[in-house]
Image 1 (spheres, rainbow, N blue to C red):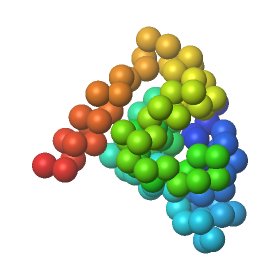
Image 2 (cartoon, one colour):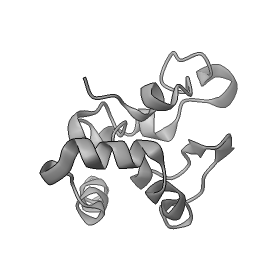
Image 3 (cartoon, rainbow, N blue to C red):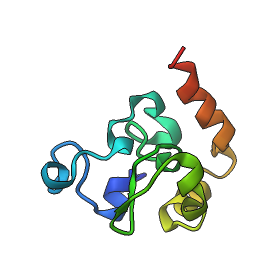
Image 4 (cartoon, rainbow, N blue to C red):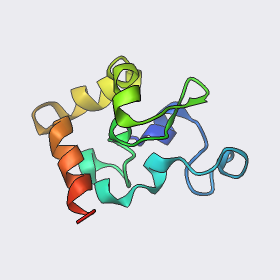
Length: 102
C-alpha cells in the first residue's frame, strides 16, 4: 500500500493526528487540489509542491525555498521510485494547483 507523507514520516500532523493540535494540520494533509495524485490522499504524495510543510522539525517556506531539500528527501525519492513512469512532473502538479485558483 502506498503511504502518504504523514504516514511515511510519522509526523502526526494529519487531521486528527497526535500533533495536529499542538503543531497544526500540515498543509499537505489539507491540500485537496492534489487529491489522489500518485495514489495519495490530498497532497500526501506530492508534499514537495505545498508551501509550509514541516521537515526536520522546522516549517518550510515557499515551494522555491524548500524544493532543494525535498529533492534529497527519502519520501520524495520513494514516491518517485514507486511511481516510475507514472510520476507526475513538478510543472504538472503546479499547474493542477493553479488551475483551481482561476
